[in-house]
Length: 392
Image 1 (cartoon, helix red, strand yellow):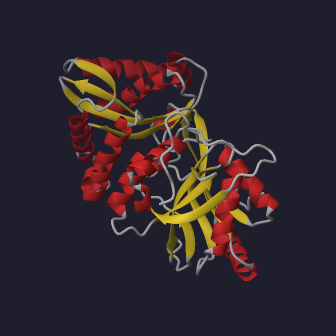
Image 2: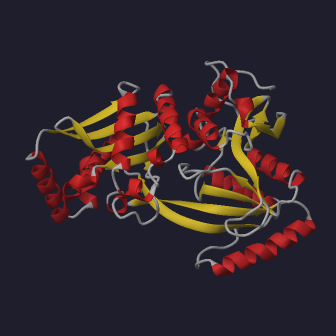
Image 3: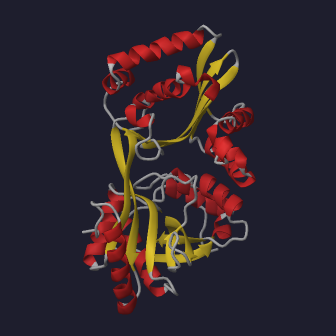
């Protein structure tokens, strides 16, 4: 592989100065080519200078997911270089089916435990990245009718750069799905935010629930970073989540060996990279609610939470989320993505801000292919709810 490790003193990939030539290149490589110490160092350097953080595409998480879910190496990585340094990265795959229809297309690769599909792109090179990516898809379309990007933020520098490039190329694209999920972003103190989010009656009820819980034994809350006792914490989390409704319906992490493997590897990777924060609500020495955050300045991601359903009447999940509001006072953190589904019954009542996330379909290839795509996307938008439309 042509890439080399980036020195610790030169972590930022600089955008080219106006008028200054900077060789740009984008190519597809096997993800295994990036699973080397030198490649991971360059990858981590890229993550430190992105316009928008995405922990799910950082080396410690994406490699864990690929090892678990793609052992045969079918997924490729689009590797974008500026001046021979890694400046952008996105996992992609060729798919013969578009959800339930036999429609071949190129797609960004996501999995059920990936809550953001935004590429990692060096700050200042957003437009260059999208131009290179679209050129690559035009030249490597194969049987694919279009490019599909999942779990994309519908605001921010990456999205605005994509819109600008689509406009300059007069390239048809559409938002084919959109949802607004809970986000935490405020200048208020944690206590002031909590008071503004919940009525006095609800706050009184939570105090009553905490007092009733304390009558059962000693209650404490811990906040931990690093990998101290992490193996035990992971086992406790997996058992706690599996003991509830997710275990019953087979959607708990511990329900499948692949997700268990990915979770363990990713959390140790996050801890080693200084990305992990853990909250635990404890009753008489046993965890009854647990939460894992990925801290990726200037943002954070509330990755996974679990609680003991035997204590549901005391709202342990809400109590641990109440403690999680301390993120508002954490230096270097301006916001936190809940990673929750839209209209989540619990977090939507506490976190008042919203982050728009969607799926985008984009025309690629020549005239005939783009004509077919235009007909396809027109039919899809007609079936979808109002508010979805071509990207302008």
